[in-house]
Image 1 (cartoon, rainbow, N blue to C red):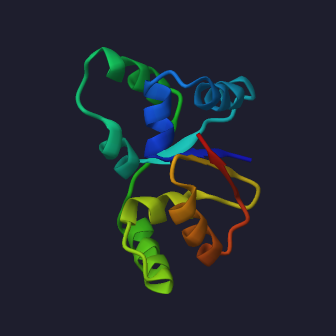
Image 2: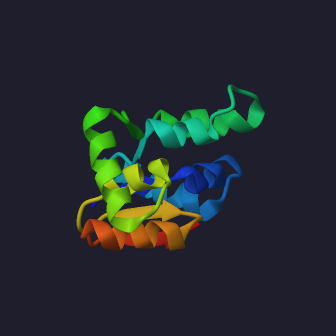
Amino acid sequence: MTVILDAGALVAIERRDRAAMAFVAREQWRERMPVTHGGVVGQVWRGGGPRQAVVARALAGIRVIPLDDELGRRVGALLARTDASDVIDAALVLLAQDGDEILTSDPDDLGTLLAASGTRAAIVTV
């Protein structure tokens, strides 16, 4: 099982939300790295400052997957099946495998994409 973080989860960590931080800490304690992708980092990263220091520390223990050509093509195909348009959310869903947990502040959009992907992952709202 892997924990996958969307932008809302990283913002929750930035705000020192205990639940979001506990998910990440649990995974690190179990020697499993939470996962996100570079597009999600781009949604959250604003180049520094005291609040960003919390995100920077968290990102040091999170595997950041590149949003490359192969993933981009898979994203486009998923978006075509769902008539959705959010590339960042679709790419996040495609990182998931059966049994994974996706931490999000936007369960509705991710739920639609997850259903269309055929992956049985849990959506956890933070």
